Structures are given as structure tokens and as C-alpha cells.
Image (cartoon, rainbow, N blue to C red; front, top):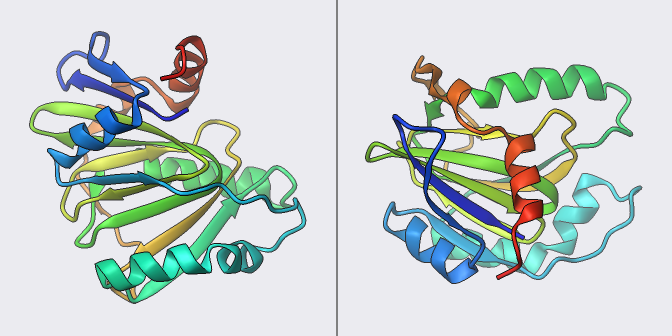
Length: 195
């Protein structure tokens, strides 16, 4: 169940909005120029390669590429079964946890697992807890950060307009350290009734 939580950026303790309703989430994010949609989740085995998963979603990926003009698509994943999991997860988590922005949109589809995108816009922080089936697009030049949790496990398809791929411009703002983490939002999400 996807969860959107919004706070004033000066008060990380009191949400001004909390919803699991997909239409409400879509409408709220649209006011920021962000896109949110859901795809049907397709099953794949634990031993499926990242390329196998990308092939599984080929029709949906091609539709997004054609509609949005993306020229590069890749897929990333983290799983405790990986041989260098601890090293990769710690380095990746720290990199994405710092507030940054991109010259390009940041479009992500979660084929498996979960993660939280935090958008810092108009003196508010919008935390979108994404799960398998969620496609989110963070507009170019939107300050944000991403938390994959302390024990991340996900498979995510990424879309780019530029062959350079992921290039972050870090703001130096420590704001990410003051808001609820992936693990805290995951626990909160489990307490809420489904929409």
C-alpha cells in the first residue's frame, strides 16, 4: 500500500496530510509536476536476472519511453542474497539520503520491494512510500532524497533523457536527517487501513 505523508519543512513531527488513496496521491503530486501511476505487478523468480525483469516489463517500459522521450533505461536491484550486499547497501543508502536534485526527471518503477522518495518543494516535504507496482516521476530540478531502508531489498527500473544516467547535484542541506525514515514510514504504513 503506497503512502503519501506531507509535513511543513520546519515541523517533521506533525503531518499536514497522510493518505493511502491512490487518486489523492496522484492529485497531490500533480500539483508539484510529479507523476504517479501504478502498473500491474508481474511475478518473477528470485533467480531472475535484472535483464529478465526488464524484459518482463518491456511493453510498459516502451510506452513510457515513447510518451516521455526517454533514451536510456536501466534496472537496479539490491537483495541480501547478493555477495557484496552490505558494502553496496551502505554506500548506496548514504549517497541517496542526502538532499539533491537532477537536471533530468527521475522516473522509477518498483518491480519488487519498496523505497521512499522525499520531495522538498514549497516549504513542504512530501514523502512517497513506494511499493511494487508504483511508477513515480520526480521533475527535473526538484530537491529530494531517497531512503531504501536499513535492509533494502528492491528491483527498480530507471528512465533517463540523457545517456549520463544518474547525476545528482547535492544541496548540502541536512534536512533529510530530521524527517521520518523509510523504516519509520514502513511501520506507520502497516498501522493504516487500506484505502
